Length: 128
Image 1 (cartoon, rainbow, N blue to C red):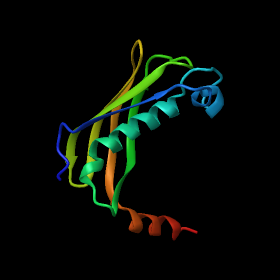
Image 2: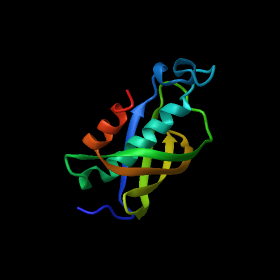
Image 3: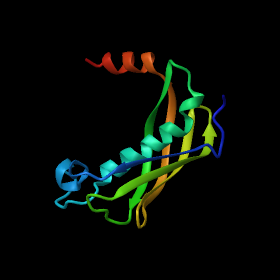
């Protein structure tokens, strides 16, 4: 199956204390951490195109430009939606948006590159 513009996925999670800025080290408050929102957005992007990848392929994130516009307390569910907006060879661009139970909490653009897992790992571990 070919990766095409418009492919979309949504993922969700419940905000727990370990997902807060205070716990992950990105701030002092017990609210949903930006790094956790980013991970959820990236997870949605991965899910959006997973069915198009062979067993030897995966994607790696290469760029992310997001805004985290609203705080979410522990106990609320958050969800992220990713939609393919461009396909340029192996580079896939996504519009990503995150929501909690009251509305949008963040949005942005994310790029991922399709890679061959083993070759990528070999190159990374050759640095040792």
